[in-house]
Length: 217
Ligand code: MD3
Ligand code: FE
Image (tube, rainbow, N blue to C red; front, side, top):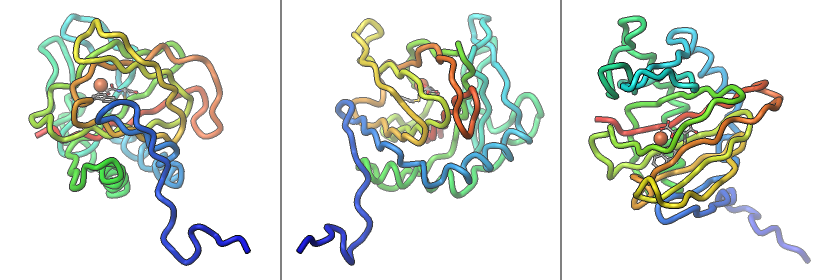
């Protein structure tokens, strides 16, 4: 007789793939919610459209961004900051839908960070050729809280380095539905995204959308 391993028990735990100390990949974790996630993103971007922001150095980013939640990450000639107001509209950022907040909280718990209460969700849109250079995320008040990232649409090559910009970076393929929790010693690692390759995704077309949930304040 072959017993079903999960017979009468709870659903199996999602596959956890450690990428580095503090960094846990949950492959496909967001897939069950893909349709509702995309509808929520469409509603957010109707209120706060994607825009390509300007860096303090005066360059326009290739990635288009928007935010939802109490705080949003913005950059302009004066610097990087979290702001409660969308500078394009003068209005608060759209509310963070409970589905998004709960997805991030559940992923963080799976990775060993229970009670993750994100107050900012940065939404990045990549079209073919868009990239993100190596950087650290250090505009958040409490770097003891993790960052949770959700990848949707076209796959990307993610670069994950060390605590120094010059440390050699590992490359990881992040595909539709993949969620990564970045905490502990990974939280301040340099990271980036290689130029997005052309392609066609069934739900998103020739785009990649990445959500990053943060505890900003
Ligand atoms: C590792 N976004 O928005 S997500 C960013 O795919 C950002 O759009 C990339 O880097 C993207 O700041 C990467 C994965 C990620 C996000 C935050 C991290 C990895 C991280 C913070 C610390 C270490
Ligand atoms: Fe980042």
